[in-house]
Image (cartoon, rainbow, N blue to C red; front, side):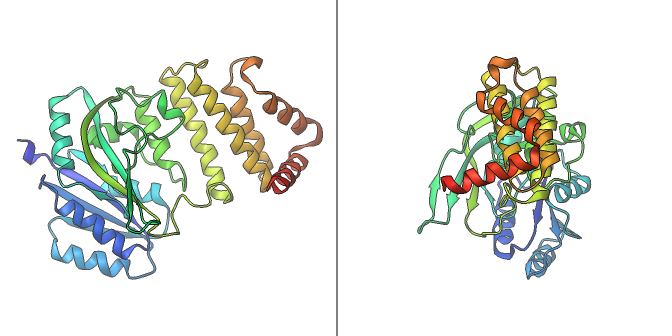
Length: 326
């Protein structure tokens, strides 16, 4: 019966011809054979379309290719989700790979734990900045059993995109992926976390995240690109609201660290001239703090200066301070 449970693997790709081939082959070699691979070509301009077309012709019953204008990872994953027909959904970045027993182990785990809606396992990182590539891990918190996404999730997306396997029913309940260029995956999991979903865990390596194979990574420039900074602010607001719904303690260390992260984001926005955005996320930093004792002196001073001299000037001052410290 478990062999008949279909898994939909959604892979967005943009200009990664060799990496996407490796990712697809890692799926085709899975011990769980009832799969469909949905590749969303997000406006590739190199030989990537040729590579995925050739592979889809070799496995026409398994691989579906959808092409669209470049819209970002969130929109690409959402389109793949809409095209999926599986009982479970696996999201896979185009430069990562799955271990060959991943889907089998996680489908079995979710079958044996019907109260759980997501199953994750150990994920490692392969760094091609070293020769030979350096394999390190487990990454983040994937090496231990955690019952729920929150409260840890408010500080970090503590697994990689390739680690979790989701029930399709949960994905439908969570709702569509946001069209963000940064932290779209974190925000998606936050919406799952606010539902209080239970997690299943397999104590085996399930996937490998590979870095430094392509320098133009989607997460690059997240501290300087205006569009990405704005998207991060939207994501932070949504993550905060989800944490409140999940009853994360407002006085806990997780909320305090979240406040500090928002404060850092406010300074990053001010330094590149996003003054309204800086003020907005600074207010979120204060909102996430409970009482004056939880707001650091630096945050209090920064907010006071913003009111006295304006966010434009404070942005110039912090930018100058950073240049001097360098």
